[in-house]
Image: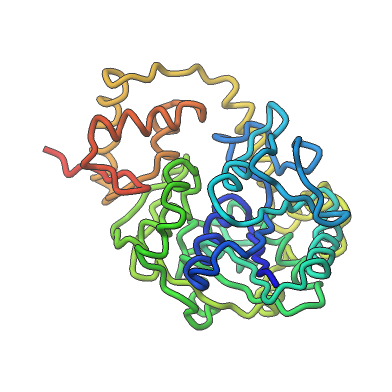
Length: 365
């Protein structure tokens, strides 16, 4: 029997699921089916919101409502997705969460998958801990995907274990706010544990999972992330994986409870605006329009490195020790298509500052 891991928020949670599967099961790694969203940052997918099966070619049916994303699958332009490349580089089976039919649809997908696979275990995994949000926290930015999977898992007639890896690393909820909900430590990730995803993290844009990997490798300090420049502490708590009571998380989440009976993504969005005061897909829509109006910046050492020096001087003054390539891409006014070229340019120019998968802020003159 395979294992089933639900990546609560998609994106980097899917990579963390593969990493945790390897850490916990070792030689048996790869037997897990990872159920995840195709919902990437605008740096990867310029189309706001999550992708459904209609946005791909080459998917393979697992059940009537669940599709496998093989390496040969392709997102239909202009959409983008990291899932086919994950499927090509990792031994796991990646199955697509389709949120188009709200919580009712995701619940049906889960039920069909559980019935079909008869998994030996089911885990709901979130990196950072925003799955534990009430919904009214001022620092909360992206509760929708997590609330959807949490609500669906709460309605499935099967034992599901909720795991939070790297509490606080997503910059959504401070560790102090969720510490009381964290149960026992299931595992503390090590440098050996992250080796199976080492090549993936060379290109994958997830900041939270990137910091999870970095802390497992022993990196400590303060990492500045996102377009807003959030400072995230990199501490000994970073590589820990905690079990959390799923029913307690569900009773805490006002958004998850509110969307239980939704049958469309539009309904979920409307309730998110009502409960949280915003929809993250609205944010993506607005940012996508803003990005379209931006003019590209020439990418060469002569134009980039002086701007990098200025940013690093300012970052040092804020006590920042590390940052992500996503943050640097936006700070330097580059677009998502230039992220990988920027990464290569900086690593080639200043290899001593590359602390995989993060960028170490120079100590200055």
